[in-house]
Length: 434
Image (cartoon, rainbow, N blue to C red; front, side, top):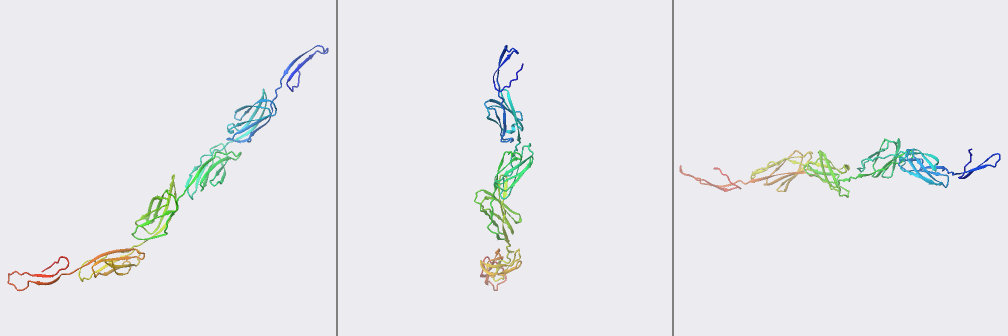
């Protein structure tokens, strides 16, 4: 027969058989029964939570409630990975799975076993995909006072929406919710460290952080000391400028002016920045500085000087000079003009000494009676002081003085006659005629 004996502990059990009804005949047998205690899972947990970022570690833990036993345990992950270990008593046992994304989202199954006696429990874990931040693109070097636009994007296509976060050089944080394939643009005038990354809306899983250093190219401010520069027509214009910069780097400067004038040169950044115009015109002459670094060229604001070119009088030569006989009347003439038609002052000189002055209108002809030999010069000056000068020489020749003629008288026909004249010759060779 089969005896149904409730087994609660392991021990030696004795079974006795007795004949009925006499009860005098009996027999017995013994059996050894070992009771193996079955581990019992009292808790199964996941750290830091049952929602974990794919790049973070996942810690899974279990606990058996039956004390004083040694047992084996096995974790089975959603992707079929088996993690095995041993534990004792009611201690908490844990395993670290890193990164969590390598083991997948889903049910994690724990089986504990003591010599074939098992218990099982499960826990569901959601592994969230982590964004991947691509490199930050755009100009990291830009001109001071300008702005630069930078852009970046997420390279993990397994996400739908996420949050883009940027930390500006002044520690300001800007963020926006985007779709996974969006390109994010940020415009800033700030310089320094600029960093961006992504996080997921659920779980706050952060991507790698990308950073660049923003630099502004500084252009010194040009200085022109004069607001207005005046000169006469025909003079050479001398331009110059400087800066307050205390640097030794070389800088490029450009002067531009009316009539298509342009001059470009290089000089130390502190200046000076010279240029010349041999045919200047009235108008604004402007100086601009530029600095180039890594294919980025930055320009300063222009500063200008107003140039006024005053017209210069023109003497159309002096007529009437040359050699004359003593006591002969000599008159010098000269026509003077000026482009703006204004009146001019004039001065006649003889051998450097002033002999006549006055005022003359443009287009008039000046006359002067030259009564003495020497160099006659005419100087005509405008109101601003622009002047023209013309000169001519006048000389007087002294006539020979015939004092006597000899050899005259009566002579016989056929006789030779010799005539002779005497006098005071003038300068040079004297020509005589009988």
